[in-house]
Amino acid sequence: MPNSIRRRAITTGLSTISWSLAGLTVVLGTALLVAAERPNVLLICVDDLRPELQCFGKAYIHSPNIDRLATRGVAFHKHYVQAPTCGASRFTLLTGRYGGSGNEAIFDRAELLATKPEQVAPSMSEWFRQHGYTTVSVGKVSHHPGGRGGDDWDSEDIIEMPGAWDRHLCPSGDWQHPRGFMHGLAHGEIRNDATQMDVLQSADGPDNIYPDGLTTDEALRQLELLSSGGQPYFLAVGILRPHLPFGAPAKYMQNYVGVELPAIPHPEKPDGKTTWHASGEFMKYNRWDRDPNTDGDFANQVRRHYAACVTYADAQVGRLIDRLDELRQLENTIIVLWGDHGWHLGEHAIWGKHSLFEESLRSPLIICAPAATQAGAKTAAMVETLDIFPTLCDLSGLPVPEFVDGISLKTILDSPDTAHGHSAISYAKAKTIRTDRYRLILHPDGYCELYDHSLPDAETQNIADQNPDTVAQLSEQLQQRLRRD
Image (cartoon, rainbow, N blue to C red; front, side):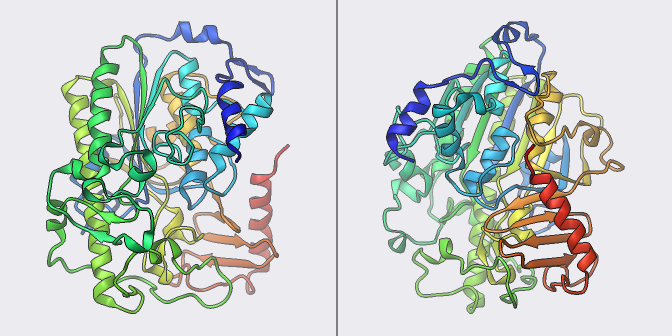
């Protein structure tokens, strides 16, 4: 998007205070009616996080703080994102709507806001802001850490989400700017040429030798300010790891030295037409001429470094929870931990995201509500990232806007064992619908993949040709869900 257009996005429609759709009118005066007892919201966004955690039934990842968080809330074991890429997935999180499939989705929204503001609904944080909340983001919450554009992602004139945040912060430190921060390795190393940056790293030192330590330091400062501000707050904190490159303090690697890892399931490249890709995001880094698809020892090194990054991210989650507790805010704060998508660690011979297989689209979701009656429960109800916006409104006592495409998950939080979810839609270069039993992937040229999750083969055996009626039925459901009135 041209910079001139993005600059207009910050000067046109800075806050869509009044926005109507289907008879709904939002009036700024409602913000004055917010009750002092409304809960705060802490939204923790973790990049590229697989549901490979002990609280999700997987044993070898060391994640004590996320596991502890799960004992306070409900873990959604069948949560699916709308897109297997950061920008598009975060667009849905922050708007509650289906959208584009690329990383520019949020900036595209800003462009539309600049030119046709009447067509742009408030974002989730803007909705909370209009209803009396102080809204703050720290780190990578939208696509760019700090929520700005420009060459180094630090322009005060180019805002990803105009009107969304009272403060949107990225403490770049030795990494100089948010662009350097995004893919930074230890002690301020910035990715300029990915081929010259190691894909794996484990350096000695405290948490702040990598970027996420600085994010958490700033988030803790913001919690101090917000807790004494006299208003309910919506604080979103974006943790980069385990995003590439896989760098984390060496102390977190100690959990995986000598640990025997489980075998990689279905590690072969799939036959026929699929959304398989050559793992370009991973392969462009310096890999010392090693390929994890053909080098088992290197594959295990990659998996151990990924795991160390998850444990590093988990430590940041623990710091946030502990500070909430110290501030006596824990009992009046809704906490959501959300992974923006999954990540393949060799399944289907992919090392990355961007596919429409299960490994790219399923990610952790934990929701902790004050006075939860089902603390520590897990649910197999199928849900989507779309549902987080209306759920947070419902739990906070805010009106649930009619313009969102998702639904509130409060009934599932109340009855996690018996509640039923709904099918999940995702998209990239193709579109997919996931039901409890099937995954259908519909390609633009009409080619279909159909997988049956009740069978051991699951997403390794395309059964579309043998099941034309199921393909037709799911195709109609998919198109109907994405159809606009």
